[in-house]
Image (cartoon, rainbow, N blue to C red):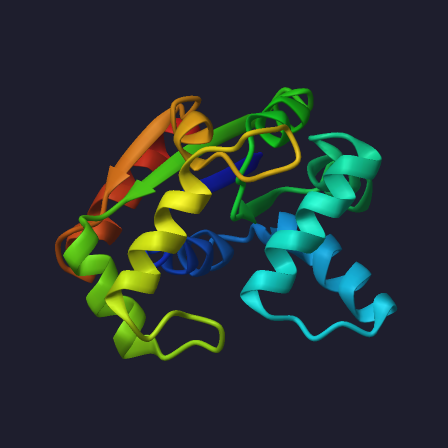
Length: 180
């Protein structure tokens, strides 16, 4: 089983990764290959560097290259894939035959509050920057950029994550029963 997650920043994808990991799925991310590449280049792993590094890798290796690299690493192993950001990544992962894409959604204010509370390095500290980043990640002018709207449209399942952790876990239990 291969479960993929897409969604806006601070929508709760990391919480879903933890939940699926607790059920035995290996946790991987399309960003893992970008982090490795950045490290090899001696570049600090900031949000901006991850975005530009992903664009560079996609320009050189094709729009689905990050997912293709993950499939090779996984070699059929059950996993949850965090932060799928392009339709080509979805298509590459669907090629495995046991892939389900979950779009994690939460309203803008809830995501902003979560982001400011978590204080993750690279997260915007001004709401205007948060909104600008959202707009930049929603669509892409070319296949090398992020296209969260188009990726979300490919989801097999949408999870609304505006409630409590207990609400989310109840929803995930139903999804787990359906796909397992």
